Image 1: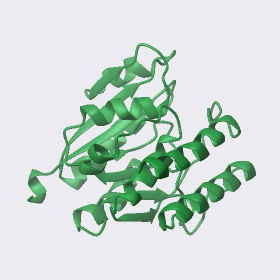
Image 2: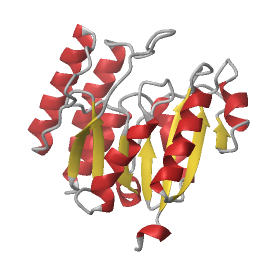
Image 3: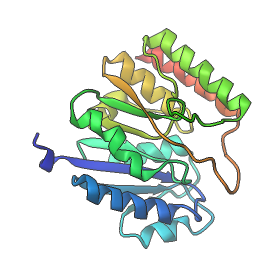
Length: 232
């Protein structure tokens, strides 16, 4: 397909991200104008209790609002179901990912060098200083995914991704929470799609706190890796 006919769908799950979501959308729009592709921005609000939904609607993007808090995985799956593009990107809404780096993730797809691209926080010249427990968890998940799929990655839990839409259609995703990243990666690799990582910068959340529970969510991620491998 000619590049000028390709549509890129960017799915942005949000939950109480009032301080950052407006800036993320504005910067994404500016980045997409520079890239030059047709695009759509899809915001899925996971029943936020702040002004995240109102702010998103004021930015002229496609917005879907969940009636109850369901989790990041569920919000992403809603966005995937609504996406019309041949290429789909995901980005976190808390400002930790730089929208200006989207072309870095998109390039291997457009050059047909990969089908699924992950933005890795740990390939950068200045790797992110993650909390010790989180960093150990990521390494454990990476090792387990490599064992099952023979696909070596450095940041399996990164939410900054670009993929061909056929991956989403083929994966039959079921995750409701943070474990969706692992489920998607394992199922993608198991089906023989080409996985690639590119280095990204990462800005730690400067307000509030991370909603990821290292123990409970860590267990769900481990379970999702095993189940995704068993179910293919």
